[in-house]
Each structure stands twice: as structure tokens, then as C-alpha cells.
Image 1 (cartoon, rainbow, N blue to C red):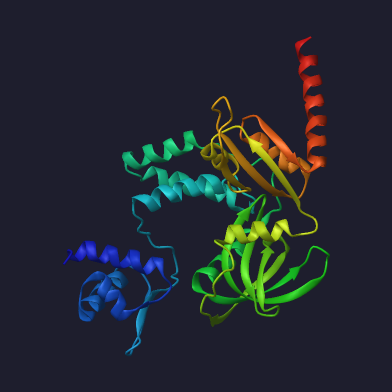
Image 2 (image 1 turned 90 degrees about the horizontal axis):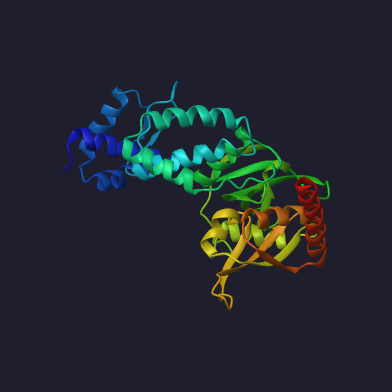
Length: 326
């Protein structure tokens, strides 16, 4: 059995990962008796952590909201992920998040052991920020409410405006939040349409958890990101761009993996690596921005309007370079 102090930290970490833990399951995870678990919970309460308990055979524990934010317990991998996520959030399209992310990042890095700081710095140096143009701004509170409903498997009600301007009230079983292109999407099962849907968060308003829990359904796709990309590909106002980039698959995914589906192609005759890219975009300009972000030669296979725009941009950039060299 672990020492009391380490076991208490482990208990806190487990309570922070789920909204609710059945008592026996939590005791089994800690390899202690239910009586020892109750004593450990009391120690957390003495330290200021509000732990709610439900009595009975099916009883359990959950970490409740307190008057102030208590210290969090994270492992090494979570600490690195937190720092990297805060760096990304500082450049995101979520309203009010940038300044708060910078402040939080400073606090996290300050208390990190040197070994973790080196890992964070290595990721920062090796990662290219590829936010080429800002997308629609999403309210941070709205994003948080939707994310919590996904985590808690709780039905959600919200107002939604479709691309054609029609407004409606939706009741859904939220599955995952996905960032694709320059927008945030919620993948959810729509209880009014009896089918899966993807919803743009910038078209959503007043999300309200209903308190009704649900059993997750099987998503008709490999993952939520793939489902959103497939939905966008079938949308009337979307543009599907096919291209071959003369760069390794890993380089392409690092630069534009969030916005495109990529797969390795056979190498060229000279041995140069090639990657096939399919970008679903709302404009030809955005697709070209994404391809250019890789920093490698590429060939556009279609559609024609994207090839024509690329040729026009090539002429403009060439003229600009000639003027500078005079």
C-alpha cells in the first residue's frame, strides 16, 4: 500500500479526472478498504478540497466546486501538455483567452522542474505556429459549457443558426469538440433530427446543460475530426482541394494536420518524399495559405479555380520580387 501522503495525492488526481467515482471502484483503484478511503477523503476536505459523498450501496464521491480554485495535481505528461496547450491558446480564436493563457503559462512554467522546462522549450522550438488567419471568435464561457457537457455525458440545449440563416432550438447528446480549419465544431447526436450532426460554435448561443445523462452512442466515423471533415466536404459552400506536397508526411501533418487529411504517396523519381493532401476550405485563398504553410513545393490537382488563383498569386509575387531587386 502506498504511503498516506502519496495515496492522498493519487486520490485527488483520480477525483480530478472524473465527475463522479463509485466508492468501491475508487477504493479498488487505490487498493484500500472503503473505510481507509473515507479517511483519505476527510484528509482532502481538511486541506480545503470540497469532496461530495453519496451514501448507500451505489454511493460514491465527486470533487465539487469550491469558493476558490485549489491546487491541481498533474503528472509530467499532463504538465507538458498543459504548457503546450496554453501556448496554443494564447494565439487562439477564443474570446478573452489570450491574456489569461499567457498569465497561466507563466505560472505553470515557473514551478516546473528543469527537466520539464527543457521538454516544453524543445516542443516550442520544434513546432511551427500555423495560425495563418484568424477565424470567427468563440466565447470562452460557451466553449467551457459545451466541453463540460461532453465530459459529463450530459444532454445539452442551445440556440443555433444554420448557414442559410434559419434559427432553431437544438437538444443534443454532445460527443466531442473539434477544431478544424479556423473554426470550432461540436460533434453531437441531434435528438430532434435522430442523427449525428456537427455544429459550428460561433453559430451557437445560450448552451444549457439539462442535467439528463446519456449512454454514449457509436460515432459513424473513425473519430470526431474525420466526421467533421466529411460533413464539410458534403456542404454546399465548402471547397475540396486536392494537392501533392513534396515533403514527408510528418512535416505536412505538423504544419496543417488540423486542417487537412494527409497520406503518404510513393516517393518521386529523385527520391523526394511526397504527401497527398485534401483540404476542405471555405475559400481558395484559405486552401493556398494552408499549402504554403508547409514550406515545400506542391502541385494542385484541383479544382481549377484554385490552380488559377495560385497562378495569379505567382505572377503577383514574382512582380513584387522583381520590383524589390531593381
